[in-house]
Length: 73
Image (cartoon, rainbow, N blue to C red):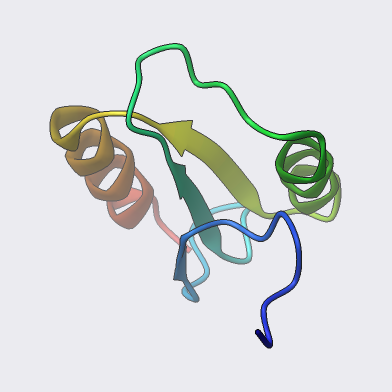
């Protein structure tokens, strides 16, 4: 209800290096299986100059966010 199909679970609206924002799709399994709408949305976001990734565990999530925040404007 009120959600765009395929839109990632988390968003960090902060510019970092060449990216305008960070989007993260969380998955419970390590297979990174996304629906067609999720895969399409992730591809579109990356094409538009954002960083969009699929993450399946906390350590990867932490690394992705920390690496993103360390980048210089």
